Length: 502
Image: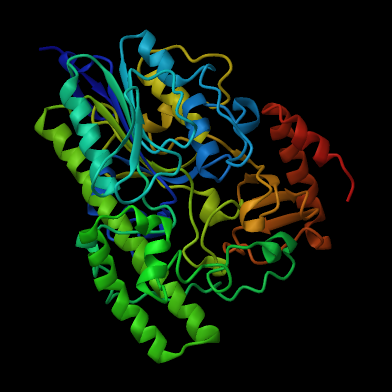
C-alpha cells in the first residue's frame, strides 16, 4: 500500500479519511497541577498520556478568563465582543451564529456535546447533546437533552463519561465524528468522588511565594474578593459545617442520597473536629484553608483524570486512536494560592494561561512541547483546516496547523485579552496585550489604571512598572501593540476606553 510521510510519521492512505475529533474540556483546571506541565503537586497520569502521545502547548492562552465566554470562543473562533457572550451574568449565547461544529456537519460529521456547556440549553450544531443544567452538580446532577430534563444518580465525572462512551457506541464510527466532553470538575466547590478521599491528605503543599502578596502598585488586585484567607467559605467551600443539619441544608448536599451523605460526613467530620480543637486563627488558619483547598481540588481532579483514561482506553480498544484528534484543555487557568487567591478572571499568568494538550498520531510527533503562543479562538479554524473545511471569514482565530507539523514554528507574537464581567469576586474589567517579555493591562470601571509587567525580570507580576520613567519607551511600544490588536479584533469598547485619559 502506498504511504506518505506527514510530520515525521508514516501514514497509509487508509488512515487519511477526515479525522475524528474528541475535545475534553475541564472547568478551572490549572496547568500548575498537571504532571505534563511539570507539576510537583498534582498527579494526572491519564492527561499525561495525551501529552506522551502528542504535543504540549507551553503558551496557550484564553481571550477572556471565565467559563461561559471561553466555551463560546471555542465554538465560534471569535472573541467575546464578536460572539456576543461577554460574561456569565448578563450574556445569552446565540447558537444560530456560525459554529465550527456546523461546518463539520456540512462535510459529514456527527457532532455531540455531553456534560457542562454553560451557554444555555437551546443548542444548534449538534446531532446529539446531553448537557448539565447550568453549572451542574457533582452528585446526582440534572441533564438536559431533547428528551427533557432528567436527574441521573451518581458522580458527575463518571456520568458524563458514561454518556460520552454510550454515544460513541451508538454511532457508526466509520464516518467522522466530533465529540465535546464538558467536565464539571474542577469547578468550585471541589467535591471529590468518595473513592478519592485521602488521595492527597498526606501530601506536602509548599505555600506559594506570593501567598501573602500585599498588591502594592496594583489597585485592581487589591480590590478583588477571591482571597483564600478572607473570601473562601468554611462551609460552602471547605465542608466545615458546624452541624449535620447545616451541612444538609447546603444545596450540594441536599441532592445526595443517604450513602453519599454518610461518606461525606465520615470523611469531613474528623477534619472539622480537629480544626475546632486546634483553635487556629490568623496566618495559621489561612494556611490551613490553603491546604484543605489543595486537597479537595486535587482529589476532585483525580476523579476526573481517571475518567479521561476511560475515554482514551475506549478509543484504543475500538481502533480509533490513529485517526482521532484528542484535545485536552481547561476553560481557563486557575489560582492555586498564588497572590493568596483561588478563582481566575485576571490577565495575570495563572488564569490567562490555560493547559492545552493535543494528540493526533497522523500528524503530531509523540511527547513534544511547543513554545508557540496560541489563543483559544485559534482552535476552531485549526480543526476546520484538519477536516478539510475552508475557514469562514468571520472567525478571528487563525489555524495553528503549521505548529502541529513543526513544534518549533511560531504562531502569534501578540495575545489580546478582554475580561468584561463587573460583578462576582469584584474583579475590575480590563483588557491588555502580551508581547514577548512584556504585558500591558488597562483596568476600567471599578478601577481606572494601567499596569505594565516585565515578565522576564518579574514572572510573578508583582511590580507594576507603568509609571517607572525607565520604561517610558516600553509603555509607548506596548500601547502601540495594544491599539493594533484592538483594531485588528475590532473591539470598539476597548478602543474607546484606550483613548480615555486617566
